[in-house]
Amino acid sequence: MKRLANIFFFLILFHSIEAQELNAKVNVVYAQISSNVDKRVFQNLQTSLQNFINKRKWTNDNFESNEKIECSFLLNLQSVVESNVYKATLTVQAARPVYNTSYVSPLINFIDNDFVFRFVEFQPIEFNENRIAGTEPLAANLAATIAFYVNIILGLDYDSFSPKGGDPFFQKANLIVNAAPEGRSISGWRAFDGQRNRYWLSENLQNSKYAQVHDAIYTYYRKGLDQMLANEKEARTQIIQALNFLSVVHAETPNLMIIPFFFQGRSDEIIRTFSKSTTQEKSQVAELSGKMDITNASRYNTELK
Image 1 (tube, rainbow, N blue to C red):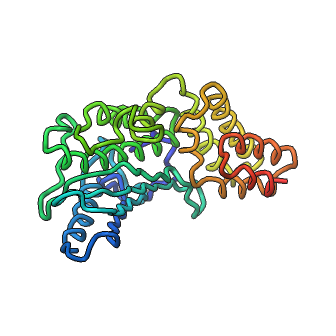
Image 2 (cartoon, rainbow, N blue to C red; image 1 turned 135 degrees about the vertical axis):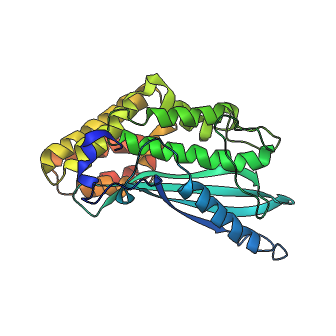
């Protein structure tokens, strides 16, 4: 079983059935593409991506059907660069269930704006982690980018159940970065491609200097959210501790990608969690979160009075 014994509460009483790890919903949006392109190509792309993600075995662990990670990939096609080559944005989202509730907490909510790829209708999407750039670069970029985010999702999920449990998947994501396809129109894999891309996400999650990020992820979910029903006061204390871990990293190295990445789509959850807390805790959370999640700083100050 995955994530060691501390996930026993997610298991059902029926016999174990080996299953793939993800329950991904893929949506390909092509409203911006001219009408003279056969739209069946995009429907085939959507089906191919969904099968690639959901039917491939990404780990050595056995997942029960109810353990599958809920996630979504929204591919918004923006233009046709050349025949069968598309420029797009990719929105990746994933969530994790909170123990003993119907609530799911976001693991990732990220938009990748540096995505150009080749897709030919009815050609399979191929990915070999030992030979990532072995196919035509733009075709390889499609599989490599999706596989990268699959491993990021797995890493974050495993991190949330056991201390640094996601390390093997972050290492795989880093291998993809290091062996990523190269081409004139391919970007997002290199340090100089920008400050918020696949390279920096992988680097931040692999760099031992930022190890407290992983402590924060585990503490936030396993010691915090998962314990809200059993001991709400202690759970909130642990969530504050998680924010403190992140604050230390942020203070030592400002402008890291991983800090806004963590807070993306999480402000509502934090505010709701502390809405009935003590004045002291509200003030502490508003200060900590506001410094790191600048976009929502006014919300924390206003709603956590």
